[in-house]
Every structure is written in C-alpha cells, then in structure tokens.
Length: 110
Image (cartoon, rainbow, N blue to C red; front, side, top):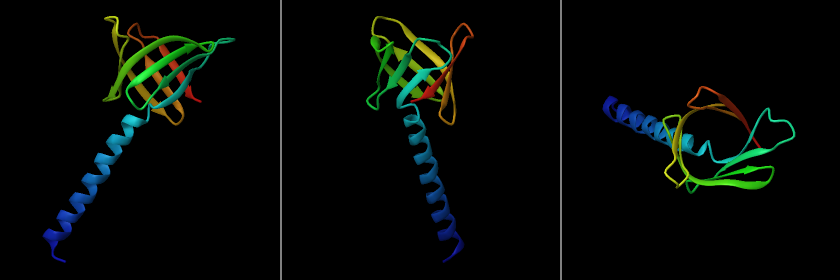
C-alpha cells in the first residue's frame, strides 16, 4: 500500500469517527432527566428522539414543546411565542442547564 492510499484511508476512517461522534452527541440528551435538589417534588424533562419534549411536575404534564440540541445548547420552543436557548453540559449521567438569569439546574438521567 502506498502512502497516498494509506493517508486517504486514514482520513476517511477519522472523518467517519468524527461524524459518528457528532451525531451521537445530539442523541445524548434523549431520555428522561429529573431535576436534582427539589425536595418532595418531582420535575422530570423527557426529551424524545423526534425533537419533542415533555416536562412533568409530580407526574402531571406541565409543558409539551419542541426542542433542538446543537453546539452544547438546547433551544426549547413552547409554541406560544416563547423560545429559550440554554447552554447545556454533560458529565456522565448528569446534565447541567444554565438559565438566562444565571441559575443552574442539575438534572440526573433516570
């Protein structure tokens, strides 16, 4: 195998890995997340693979909305003209959302 063929193969393999990692990153938010630190209350975000989400409070539906997740930010469109974009960070089974006012919400995957 000559150098050009090897380099092209290596570049192709690396590109495939990077593209796959990016697409998996978008799916990292999919699932149910419980807000940590609220005593006697259960606030759960459920992000579905189809770009919709539900927020329940003590098991009751509080909000249905559409969402997009890209560049470590989630944009939530509640459909009534309110659109919020929040930075999101992941560490294992923990997600941190920073609100516009600076408040930090820690959510744990359930």
